[in-house]
Image 1: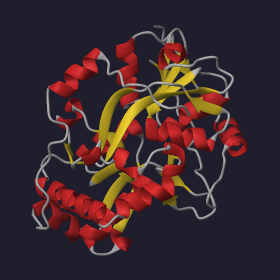
Image 2: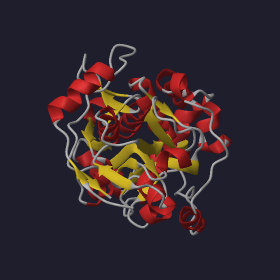
Image 3: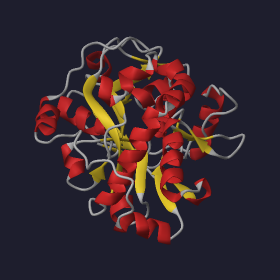
Image 4: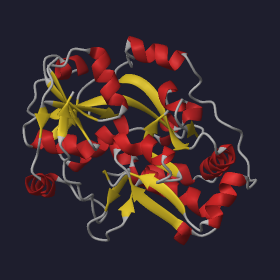
Length: 320
């Protein structure tokens, strides 16, 4: 598997996105300019987890978290004392967390959840600060105190649990592969073997592709949207990402499609410092309330249902 470095021009990338994006419900995302890339919709078939990934998930309980609580412990009190809760989010993932060019606001499924968490903890939505964070910077942003929480389609796995704490899972996902519609590939193996595949640095897809060890080249980028740009430019043959982001990209650009098959079923959670169990407990309480009120399902129906092609219950971790 060869490695190379790819650079794209921001102006060209944005022009392609502007031409290719399908703007629904009043707006879609503005793509961030692709960073220097370091080479490193059909129905899913039965998931196939790579061997290393299976072992990783067997080593810990990825659904385990502290019990929900409404109590204000030291971490929650510290957040309230600084009068703002800073939440790391995505601004480039269509329907999950993307900046609407018409309003300038970041919006999507993850953003609804982030605002609900912030409003519940702070008692005032205006005290919630949404801070865009790149995929590869999520853990670093938490550990260095740049954000209090990450709500950004962040997969829970054993390795990450060594660095940060996670809430209870709030979404079921799996890895899927996107290709241009002109590609002859029908399955993940077809799309990856001997091909140039794009993944986000620090994302789960990066580990899955490495474990597969069949790609001709692997290109890593700072954010998932950069992979879509590189496919539009003809610089990569395929993109591996989770099914939610893949569905969003396929909806955003109708010149790409998702191939058959999925890999490594996973769950997504809210990440924060391991030293803040009371904050984790508060987040878990918000998640429980958010789901019980029907807000989770309503947000899913608004942002994701047209593209995920399944009812909400399939993606709530308690009902899979």
